[in-house]
Length: 410
Image 1: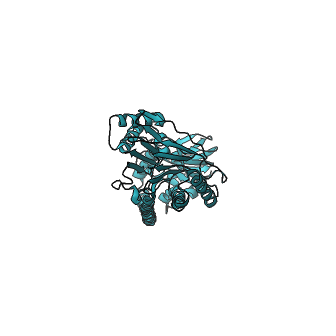
Image 2: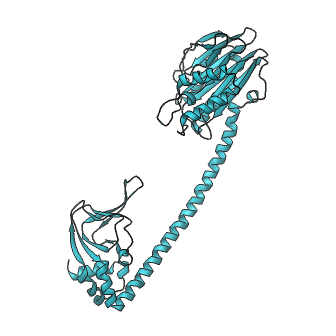
């Protein structure tokens, strides 16, 4: 590159703006030519800033490392451009790395050589520092404009988030109806021969679990628990569909558990076009006969503690989850209950909770905890099971909704 072309490039650099031919002739002799091969590092992030560089030909990439050390691409520079110019003013460490991406010819201007030149030429020094001040203020104004724009965008996004949060708050209140209907309130007695307690903790504001107890007549109680796949708004909406269908259908079909599950599945498939999947378990408690009739739709069997046997009763049912087969059929099973027996209904969020070693809580631990609590005649069994699940997690994230219903027969 001849002197004329080199001076033309210098004139395009802001910190050399306005310099005449004589001043530029002072600079060109101290520019050192260098050749870089593809992949060669010219500047390494964190190294001292000791020179600026002018690209004659070729191209370089500018990158930074993130917290994990992975490379973040910032920009690409080609012939006629420059980088590292503020190293002529300060000796701060490099804020980024520069690597040649193809064979490149570059001129290097060392700060120590340029400092000697500035000391010898007052006019050059005055114009150079004036340009540096001008460039600094220009970058400051750009940064300020970007901050102002970012603040405006942030205010807009904050307003949007506040609206979303308000919607989620309302959704949470609405969804609480799915769980905490009047008959489920802890201080309200459902029937003089049972006592109940429950836990419901969605992993985010709204979840995909629901449970309910419906009094069909003075001595007939129905219990349902369900878990829609996933969590969040989509699962919550699907839960609302399932809950509303149950509220309508239970009056007509609640005394026939298998038929009720069939009707719920047909409704779920029809409305959601088999796009979502849900599991459910239904129990009809008949206090006149002292019997429980159950039906399962892909859900975990409840734990049934028989006090007279001092052990859990094995329950068997089969039936696919809702949303898989519109023509699915369900079966019923019947069991006797006595005073001091307990039924514990639960969703995936309990048995599938992981600890920091990626080990699941599991059915075995759940049964051990329930048995130990019953044998020492603990109160608030649901709360203590939940606390044990959280303690088992050891700080691992709760990734699913946790729902638990305990019914004690008196």
